[in-house]
Image (cartoon, rainbow, N blue to C red; front, side, top):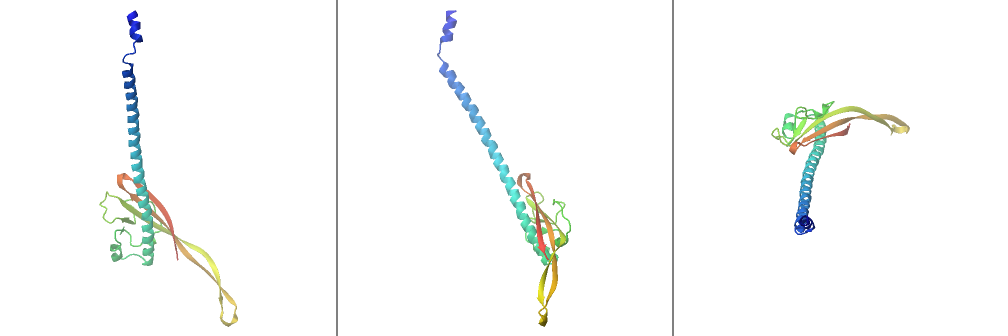
Length: 186
């Protein structure tokens, strides 16, 4: 019995056990820190891909505005105009006449770029549609010759409010879509 009590009071080897427990604790903390940093790297990578897709789609709306304005100015694109649009492939020669638009996709688009994206690479699809509205009139006074009496001329005009949809399909299956409304005053 004394021998058993003597073993219980013996502290030899306790430093080894304490140091092993501290090493196990530090290993667990290190593994947790490594896992956390790995997850943070994945999150920041996904955020980067999302931001790239957003900015590409936003740039697509700017391309869409310019495409619509050129199409209005030229009253439609000819075959030579469609061929000379650079990296943009317009599938419709009369974008400015579209009355309704919806969300673009690879099967439903008025234009896309880059022209030769290969079917599975990053690309941007555009869809355009406008609604004509009458704008409020204004009245101006004009001199009427010798009388000095003014004549009223009611004026007004029209405007077309275009919905320009831009969808960018990017790397790692990222996708972003933006709708921009653009007013063209006639």
